[in-house]
Length: 334
Image 1 (cartoon, rainbow, N blue to C red):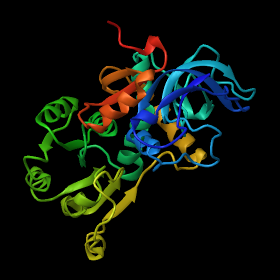
Image 2 (image 1 turned 120 degrees about the horizontal axis):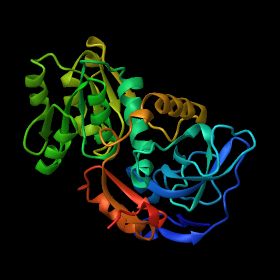
Image 3 (image 1 turned 90 degrees about the horizontal axis):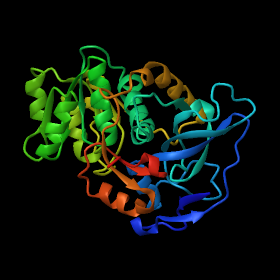
Image 4 (image 1 turned 60 degrees about the vertical axis):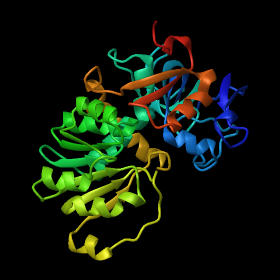
């Protein structure tokens, strides 16, 4: 098969397609002919050598944490999938390839309401958002959450999932165009952090009471403000650290106001934990996926343009997900 292989680390130019051996499936795995693979910021970190795949190290390093495609073979213990079925899957890596082997409990059948690009862009972003909102923050009907970087893949997924669950959302973005777009996804209030203080906006929005949770991708620069806007007993969920990892922590504030701080990442979890999350998501959310709930696709790149796709993500101008089409059927129709 062919795959985008990391023979070395560096800039987008290192992403090159090579011939590599076909994956061999185990008894509990399915072999998927990949149609589309979602691009995530973690892929950029891996390309730079800052986000290695979990052990055991693969014989060939291929980026890609999510994909959608057609089942072409099943292991002898797999009973719920059949050859020819359309599936989406969460991966530890390997999505930028013509074929990928996937534990069957890490996949679900693609609903008829999704095209290949949408299906391939769903697993990583929506599973991360679901985990942050419901497993980590424990949010429910009528509660309030701040979602930072809300125009990205995970942020936009979190806004939609929160809206569907009756959770009120204040989102932050960096441009007016992004603000309008995120508002259309269901955010009650959107703050352009270049023009206004999100902490002040939260104080006004909540009447000074604070929010139940914050989903943060920025890290160190937002630490103090995030803690300030949480109500007593609130939860800060760290999903990324785009702005840095080192900051001073006022432990008395955490203790006195009973704040919870936790991090979430999918790739580094034990495979059993990921399977549990996938199965819960498959039961509760997948039946709802469609035009009103699902990834919004900003742009689809042909996989020979993987380097250009990474450059585009680095510009931080996308509204929603960026996708690689591995086969022509995943490209937008003219």
